[in-house]
Image (cartoon, rainbow, N blue to C red; front, side, top):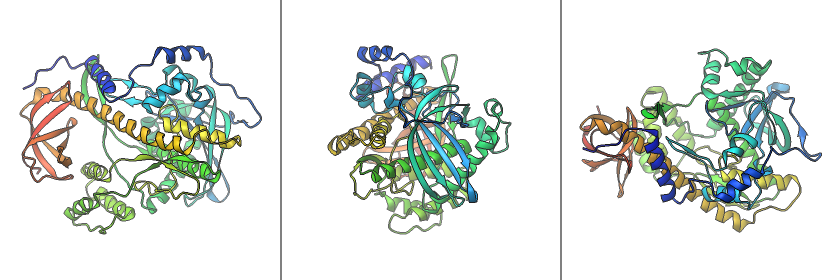
Length: 493
């Protein structure tokens, strides 16, 4: 049985810091980065006739309760025949973070903000990402606006991209907006305080639902994996709770998917190379077919996104409580997304899970380096200039960003496991119901739900495969290394 130090935030922060270094990520900003940041006195000011003044629109942000690195705002304008014009404003980070400066070098190295259970390691200094390049409430900011016309049937019939100055009228949070949209809670104070904003969000929600219907009609997968968030009580880790999807999160997700598609198509139209976000056709489709067969369902022998989504929809309706377990198994079998270079005239591989061909990452430049790259490409295209990155440079960046994203996810996963090990350490010998989430020569893994944790099955794993339910006993924890070891003791009832 493992003994642990007091279960606190400080211990987990130390683990996170060490994990960042181990994975080739920079946990701290260099002196050069800090010096450059100090020299930036204020947010970028608009200059030039090409920048539109859209401060009068009812812009608002919807994000996590505690988020301050706000990358996007949205607003809607009703049109004829049930159509809606959706405008998504993306923070103009490039206006202050110039290519090849020290700040850009740090962002290039990490390529993403890393969100661990104990600490956030931002890609950009917080003076920028949570202030001067954030679309904060009550602030005028430069932005790249992605404008889309969504028809009543949910199809995007037109799109355009341009620069503008915007003003955030309200900083809203997912949970409060979702409860209001679903009729289970009152309008959040920030929403009710702005005349016309409630009607505005109703229009946006309706358009988002229409966009979603079209995506799913094309085979986009309706998956529902459980994310967790750490809960601390005066510095001590108290619990790991599920952070579930809701209608407000889906609204933003639907808009961002559409905006990223519009960005990809715009760059293609301008003859620019781009970094595409792709999810290849799953290699373990036969295992997904076998999972469906266990439920009495039949999937075609070759990968078919529409057939898989139909199976997932029926499974959610039949057993919503267990659907996240099935979703997790499918996610593992689908594999990970990656970045890939697309040259003008080249056929994009597409994103299997989203059922879209044209897709990039462009809507979170404060948090992801590929989005900052996309922003620089867009601004060059808008100005009639040559692409700021060559195809060779973008190919190198695609590989690097994919690798660093994987490293960042490993850091986040390791800290989650360390946090779970802290909570589970006093429960050695306890039994849990779980689902197998990984099975290979490297080991067999299981996820339990209370607390939400994943560990390795070190005994009795023979013959187990992804998606199977199993009863396990906790046999060992190692907080520093994030190890949680189980023994399989029988099938899950």
